[in-house]
Image (cartoon, rainbow, N blue to C red; front, side, top):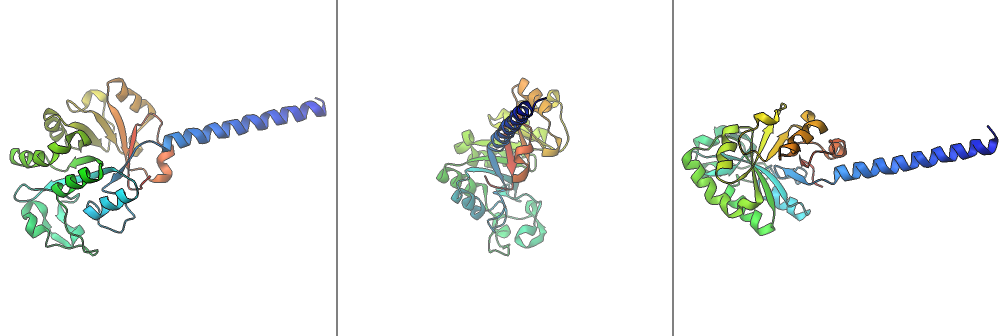
Length: 247
């Protein structure tokens, strides 16, 4: 091969590598640009998770997709709480199901925050023009559904009800809510709860093939909870992300 031809080959290879790198960067950027929901309001604000200041801080950074958890007090009042007890607010000995809202809000976190209610959350949802994924941590009773719906119905179009509990999702679907199945293990599309709109596995359990199989039966796919540096590695077929990091 002549010296001139070798130069031409090397130049061609360099161009191809540059184009491949550009395409790869573009694909990663596209993958990372999917909608991201702020898991429990996101971290980094300095406030306790699932409290009004956390969600308001997210809104202040332009993040209007919120994810939260709902449990019920002794009087069936819906509140924002991931754990079964009030340890996040300095009262680990108190189970939320055993106390009233008034008693629960006597517990105060190190940053001065108290328990937030679903009523406060939906008020802020409307005030900021935000949307939400709301996780039911327990299967609501009839009385709890009554209280839950009084707060969710005004924002129903902006809410996805999520849960690890199939019976909770089927009840929500029957009431007209968009629903998402949370899971830590793979679930076959034929085993989804009736009416499921979203399949939401742990990020380590998702594959592009699985996501496309869900799409084939009209089910969208979101994963939890990849960190920001993992966003671009999530399969491109996944529709949305739930993350502790804000976009």
